[in-house]
Amino acid sequence: SKGDCIVAINATKACCDLKPELKKKIKSGSKFLVTLRVDHLSDTFEGYGSKNLMLLDEEDMVFRKSTFVCDRTVLINCTKAAGDINRDLIERLTNPGNKLSITIEVNELNGN
Image 1 (cartoon, helix red, strand yellow):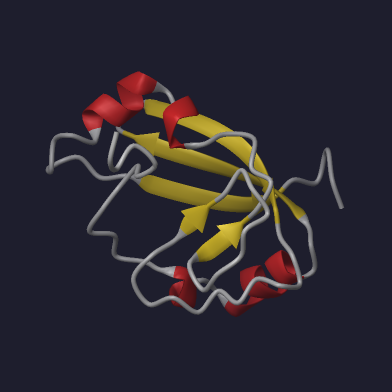
Image 2 (tube, helix red, strand yellow):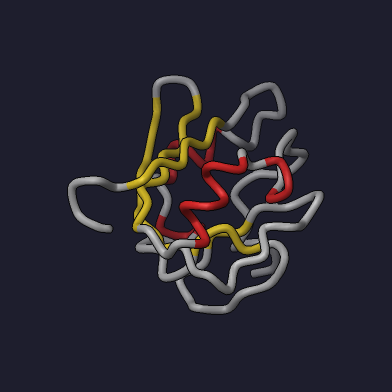
């Protein structure tokens, strides 16, 4: 169905807002752990950076299972798509008063 790849809208951050140090690590091809949090619920997935990522979009951030790259792409080869995210967490996001927190960190244990 339409929009089933979208987890959150009306974000206050986009690709262009990522810190320069994080962008550098993403462009180095590092492996990352991404944590999504809403209230007390969380879910995690892994993904990879790439030298081909531009990280320029001023509105969006996209985490992809594929290797497709555009201005909106933050990480590729991710281990989850929107449909794989904890459904209770997604349900919480249907309430506009609930906020999603996204943490992107280098996965030191299992990667570069």
